[in-house]
Every structure is written in C-alpha cells, then in structure tokens.
Image (cartoon, rainbow, N blue to C red; front, side, top):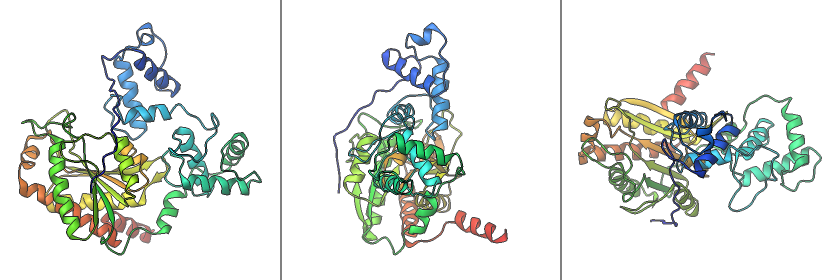
Length: 381
C-alpha cells in the first residue's frame, strides 16, 4: 500500500548563500546563543564560515546531522529553538503546536511524574492529559491550556525536582511489543527520491535513493511473507519531504517505520553499518532503542559489516512521528568497496533479510544483546 501526500519543498542555505533568509537564520542563532552579533558582513545576510560553524554546533546540540547546512531537517528545529516556555499559550490542536517551549514543558511534566510522552517538542494527546493532571494537582483550572498560571506553577515546582524523566520508564512499563509480527502495520520508507533528490552518490555514481528502493522492495516481500501489513511511504522515482513522510505514517496509523538510507563521508575510508532511533535530553525511546540494536546486530552478523553501533538522535523523521522510527544505514556508499557490494543483488537480499529477522525479534519481545549486558551489569551491582 502506498501513501502520497502533497510534498512541501524547503530551500537549502549553506556557505555562500545570502539574503534576508540568511539574516533570519543568523538572528535565530544569536537568540539561541550560538552566534555573536558583531560585524557588518553578517548583518548583510552573508552565510559565512562563522555562520556555518554556528549551525554545526547547533545541529550537534540537537542530535542533527552536523553538516553546517540549513535544510528541511535543521530549519524547523531552528525555528522551534526560538520559543521559550511562557512566550505563548500552548494547548492541544491540529496540526499540533511545536517548539522548544513544548519540549521544555514535556521535560518538566515528566520530571514531576506526569507522563507527557516522547520529549520531542510536539504537543500531543499525552501532553494534554499530563497538563490537565498537573493542573488538578496544583489546584488550577484543568483546561489543558498552558498559560501564565500553569507555567508559574511548573517553574516553582521544577526548582525542587531532579532533572530526570519518567517517560522512558512509563513506556517500558506499558510493555514493549510482543506476540509476533503477524498483522502488525509497518511502513517502509526508502530515503530521498530521484528525481530530483538522489541522496548521496557513490564513487562510480550509484544513487542512494535507488539502492534504498531495491532494499525496501525485498524487505517488503519478506515482511508480507511473515503476514505483516506493509505500507510504503513513496513509489519508485518519487520524491517526498520529511513532513510528507511523517504525515503518511500518521495517516496509515502504522506501529513502526523503517527508513532505509546509506551513510556517507567526505573521505572514502569510512565503512560499516549504523542505525538511529529517537533520543533527546534525558529521554530515550525504549522501543526505538530495542529495534535499532536488533537491526544493528543482525546487519553485523549476517552481512559481515563493521559495527558503527546504534545511536540516539533527534532527526526530524525520528522526532516528529508518534510511532517508533528507525533509520537504517547499512553501508557507506562513499566507500568504493561498499558501493561495489550495493551492486550485488545477493548482498541487498542479505541486508533485507537481516532487517526482517530483527523486526520479527522485536515484535516477539526478544531483548537485545545490549539489554542483556545491561541486565547482567545491574545484577552484579
């Protein structure tokens, strides 16, 4: 099944760009504390080296890919960073409100024991329930609207609470998936989409987007054979931006999204597999952590790939979705040897099989090696 919302394009700004949009970017970096306002060149809206370094530092602080480029993943996070708790009224609406103020609200509610869900800066249903519970406990009108009185009560209590989060604990208590993969609604998402976006290119010209499509096709067949219900974010040779991919996943009410990409590096030496799940501040998705580590282990074992490990990040696709999303990057397409492997259908089949087997383990409730090691370590203590 395929889902194709209308795409929305976001301009890309990098070293050499100029104009009022760049001036806006710089002003937001100044407000966020990543850039000093000092010279005429910057006030004229030139994307200089110092602006690039500030963007890289901002991206690194937010769990984004630190490439120094303001594109569809970085721009909305930069906009969200300009909003502080108390600057505006926040409440449940559709489309949901976004921002650092919402992320701060959710962190404070979770720290106080009011489960507000994934700490992703999105005001969702869990957040609304947590706000109303907090308001009742604080003797406020339980209207679900975070205004001056609610913010004052939160700030007052936050001064005497530790910076911890109940979110991961509550999600684990609700139970990680078990019972098998049959009937599970899973979305497969081949990254990028050519034309116009091929993703990264290998030394001999292999396109990331087309390899991702081939892996997704094989993976979909395997998961269907396991009786899962499979949806595809896009068709072959079709482009979709992150916003549309998120909307597609929500529209189909999937339980999980697997997004297939290839890694890249400026040099040709980097090699190996890595996976990414949502993590931000004190919060780590227990669902994403488990599945990402299962896939990582399977890729290393079945395909003989270098283990570049599973990492928590706050990329847009991971941050904006209500369900767990795993970004899988099985190889570095910029490595000549690994690019050659991508031309081998048998190798692509092994990648798909490894991801499928890992996904089945996840839905059976099997713990990962990392979880087993952590359990043994806690037992010794």
